[in-house]
Length: 388
Image (cartoon, rainbow, N blue to C red):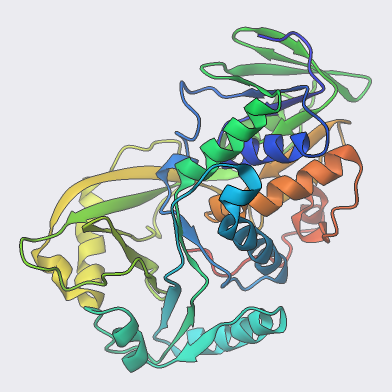
């Protein structure tokens, strides 16, 4: 392992790989990317549903989506590696007057930023997603350019291109300390030795708080907590299943139940409002009946389907559900790209580009105030309302 580097990136998920890739495009190649697991993209990146959407309530997140989705549409040309990307759209189902009012404002904001979002009724929603029971749906929104991408393919595409440019990727290597001298990053200590460096990127996903604590004698408070989210895969019955043939992502906003086709089967999940912060990714099978109770009301075919497998991953959540992107000013050379609250994978192309610009001293052409660590000093800022 290298003993010196211009930049050390902690975390080999989509964020760390994206930052590494974009730094190389800015001439910085003396980089070590450190991943604690034996493979990249096996943490939160590899355990998400792969959704990519423009439909957010916060203007800064919509702008991240606009840039990121445009990048994914040309990923093979830009990065040199093909990815699996299906733009069959996102469909949000709204059942309460308050949700309808909230989404009217959201759609107006999205359209003002150039996003083509349709406002539709339940009947149209049912035609877009065959098998859907649209009973009780007062309205819905649909964006055709939203879709499903392959998290592993995107992460490995970034990582392989970065390695080809000279980045060193160290797997099965855990960061144990970050040495700070005169209020500046000086070195990263790992289970395989020390790397002298002046710049550290905290891209540790749900472990961002722990990495922050390592930065100097007082540490940096990174307000990110891990929350478990389950994903279940239903196997298709012998006859053609009564669910969409496309990969359209359907989200019942009131319950957070969502689904999309995955191969011949169906991927689905739902948030657990009683979940508390945890690093436990054990599948809680006693949660499945709660999901099924909601699921069969929206997609009746699930009542006859069998569950082939399931997994649980971690959302890295901030108090306002907006990410942290930029420097931690208490310690020079310490940068954050954390807390994406369930929408990190889809924003990794833009977020990585923005942070790379900040690190090399370029103007990122992006207002980072909604993503600054300092926003929490005077209380929780106005962040993202539509975390699903």
